Image (cartoon, rainbow, N blue to C red; front, side):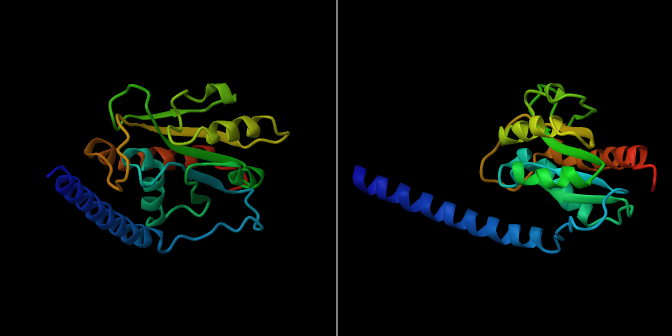
Length: 199
């Protein structure tokens, strides 16, 4: 009897994960359609990079990437480039060498109500919130590395507060999803206010 229950439970779990993985694959494929790679050989001295980080498969933790996907569908000013930075990492360092202004976009667990949008202009790596990048401590290391370079970009940080991380879901919570338009408006305001003077 116990073995039958275990077998049924295992079959249910296998079907559940298979269906969800297939759904996620399908949604990811459609989300990735139309993504354009940024050519780092081009002159970026008059551009602002909006860099969203997060794990797209982990619910609210991926809000930075969700917002990048929304912005890719918009008619953005020509001085704004957007990039899905995934869960961060040192491969992103190349972008900081060529863009004079970078706006980071990330989820944070800072105790504020979910969907709260905060903006800071960190002067040192230690100014970044401790809860920043719940998905990858490697991002903190990358920020440290940026600040020891001779030439660093003008860095701004926009965070969206999240309550909880739900694994294996592409959906944002209602509170976080409803904050997306305001986050985009804040990003575009920052980009306009801080665009390189030669634009």
